[in-house]
Image 1: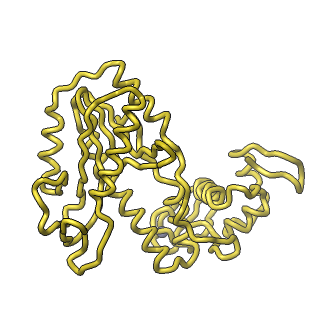
Image 2: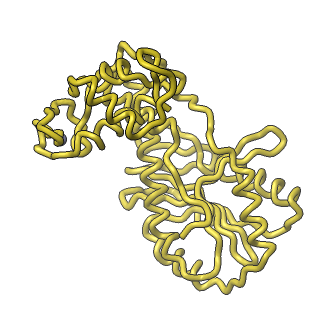
Image 3: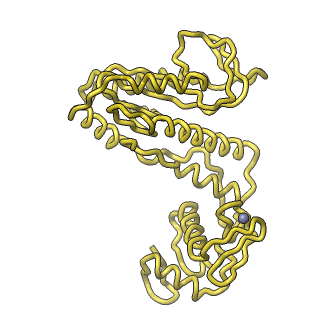
Amino acid sequence: MPFKARTESIELKILRILDLQMNLTVDEQKYYLNLEKGFEGEVQFDLLTEKLQGECFILNDLLLEINNTKFQIDTLIIYQETIYLFEVKNYKGDFCYEPDSFRTIYGKEIKNPLDQLKRSKSLLRQLIQNLGYNLPIEAYVVFINPEFTLYQAPQDQPFIFPTQLNRFMKKLDMTPSKLNRKHKKLADQLVSLHISESPCTGLPTYEYKQLKKGLTCKVCHSFSMSVQGKKLVCDVCGCEEEVESAFLRSVEEFKLLFPDQKITTNVIHDWCKVIKSKKRISRILGKNFKMKGVRQWAFYE
Ligand SMILES: [Zn+2]
């Protein structure tokens, strides 16, 4: 069990909904798919760190700040003598390393992950020194995707390639380590310094009226759903779900997209589309949320 678990960012959750409910531009969609791919890669790496048997604290997905500078860490592992810092990249395909650039073999230059790694390592070092620790930090870029190749990769850079990952993890797990109260305190401090929500910088602007309304299939995300009694049936894949659970999922999505909007029967009636009866909507809302106000002014929290 990690000391701090990874969760999806609000930005990713919102983009996932917007991708289904409006037309994202090519750039917006690219940005969204990159986030999705990045998250997927991190989750893949979590599957490996979860298997570590030795004494260590695993902290996933930290957003920290020092001297007004924010930095993000994909995975941090505290061992007795060392802190390991991992930047996980889910790049797929053929890339090429040059001393001052990092690019795809087609020549498209991308951000050098080593720059990012150096930056977070140095900021993390300052932060833990400020907290009164002087554990050394070992930092690595992990390329998690088995279909990744880096041409001209030098041996002396802190890269872990897909073909090396298993051996690296095994070696890491052999590290003798006994954790004490001080390590626990450091882990607690880092978690408490974590900034829980990063600003959603890449979100497109969206308005209620642009969005496609209706309940969606939890499996194939289709909007072609029909209500059959207590069940909601997908016309595309045939998947069935309780109306209530699909409805609540949809209300949660509405809240995520429009956090300042009040949840009322009328609003949700329009949002969910396929449930025709307002009475039924009021009943499910009343069962799952707290009702405030009365009659036509009632809303749910
Ligand atoms: Zn479906």
